Structures are given as structure tokens and as C-alpha cells.
Image (cartoon, rainbow, N blue to C red; front, side, top):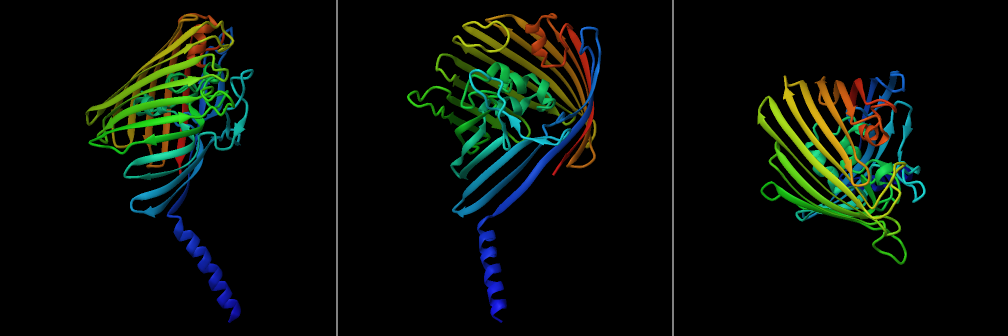
Length: 378
């Protein structure tokens, strides 16, 4: 009898603990594709590989929410990259002024925050997406597919560590997400909303070094939408500034077709070694993205897209991408896809080829890439 009472007490304690937490969810995306790319060597050789995260970046995460009463909730989200082609987890974002590309691997490199939400909106503290991701992500021509070679992901959203690693709270590596940040997102009012975000540089004696500050505004009616954002980031020495803004919109002109458009630019002012190419006091990278979705059936979508990327100020460079992407949804969780990308650089020089984000091999001016894969979410 005593054992039964003790067991009941233990179970009751666990039940009380569980009921205090409204929900905890484990979720993720597993995406893999066979990728064939031409013109990867000086003699035009091709490359065939198995790559993860071609339609959407593979990831896993844990998120939870507790109802605190009166409409107030406590929330958390931990999310990390998965390289399911090799089984590795996490991605590098850290670094220093000598290694701006970053080499520190973090288990939850994508998101790591805790916060509150309610009628006032939401506040999250920790590692957050920058506001530019929300702006270009809303209307990216291919919905942020091919993240490693997508100009909006790598340039507009500052994910290129070699170019943007010297700025913001990470002090190296990608600037797409910022450590030590606080982010506020307002509630929607007649479809309109806004957001503010600040990242702390945490440098003793210089509170503005390695900081991020951004604001954005957006509109959505559930189908169509538009967003715009502005940000300013400082480097670790507080000697250079990165300012940028991004805007995007999508509009469904008929049940069978939707249009998307984005524009973003990032400007560096101040003397800093940005990448292996010559640097100067000013450098600008601008990206135009255009796309159209054709809804052929409830399961089949065909997307056409175009990106134009230009670099100016320190050196001039340009590259274009033309993309055809088809998706077939077996279910809400499983999608098969195939894409064809044609990339063309302004010349075979490094400043042009680098803007093609690895699609074109050194010494070439163009290349095609074909990807066939499958995505499953859980």
C-alpha cells in the first residue's frame, strides 16, 4: 500500500510538471538531391554530387509554448542545420577578424531564443534571424531554395561569410542570424505589422562595436504580401559600417499564377579586408530577383526565376541566374522536385565568377546545374 501511494505521488508530480508546459514539439526537414554541374574545371569538367538541403535547408528543432494566462505565453525555439548527406549537425558561424568566414560549429546555429508573446506581439531573446531574411524570404523567387547559391540568401540576407563575416554580433561567419539579440514583432493590424531588432556587440569599452540594429514593416492578407527592412551593422574595431535594405512582394494575379519580386542592397563603408579580392573604402552588392509560380494542379507547381547580382564601389562584377523549378507534392509532408539552373558571369575574372556562388568553376563564364531530389518534413 505504501509503495502504491509513493508511485501515485511520483506520477502526480510528473503530471503537474507536464501540465505546466502547454506543448513541446520536435520538428525538422530532411532534404537530399543528386546534383550535376557543368564547367567545374578549366577544361569544362563536370561534377556530380549528393547534396542536402536543395529545396529547403535540412534542419531539426525543438520548440515549445506555455500558456501563462490572460493571453500571455512563454515560448522557446532551438533549431540547427542538418547535413543529412554526411550525417553532420550544426554549421559554422563564428570566427574573428582574422577568420571572417567563421569556423566555430554550433548545434543550434539557426535559432536559439526564449521569449514572450501576447496581444502586444512577441519578444524573443537569443540568436535570431535578421529582419532582412523576413523581407526577402516573403517573396524570394524560388522560396529560398538552393540556399547555398541563392543570391537572396547569400547576399541579400548576408549569409556569405567571406563578404559579411566582419560585421555584427557573431564577429565572423554568416550575418544572416545574430547572436545576443533581442527582437520585437508587432501584432498584425488590418494586415500591417512591424519589427525591431538589436544585437549587442558585448565589447568592453565600446558598446557600438559588433552591433546589429534593424527595423522592418510588412503587410499580408494571407495570400499576397510585401515587406521592407533596413539594417546597420558595425565591425569589431568599430572602423567600418555595413548598411543595407531589402524589399519584396508577392501577388497572386489569378488562381493559377503568382508573381514575386525582390530588391536588396548592402553597402560597406570603411577600410576592412572583406574577402580575397582587393578592398576599398566602399563596396556595394545589389540583387534583383524576379519569379513566377504556375500552379498546374493541387500537387504540381512550376516556378521560373531570374536573379541579377552586381558588385560595385571597390571592384565591378556581375552575374545572372536563370532557374526552372518543378515540385510535386505527394502529401503535405513529402515533395519531389527537379530544377535546372543556368548561371552566367560577366567574365571569367574572380569578381564576376564569385557572384555566381559556386555554380561556375574558376576559369569559366557560365555553367548549368541540374538537381533532382526529395524533401520530407516532420
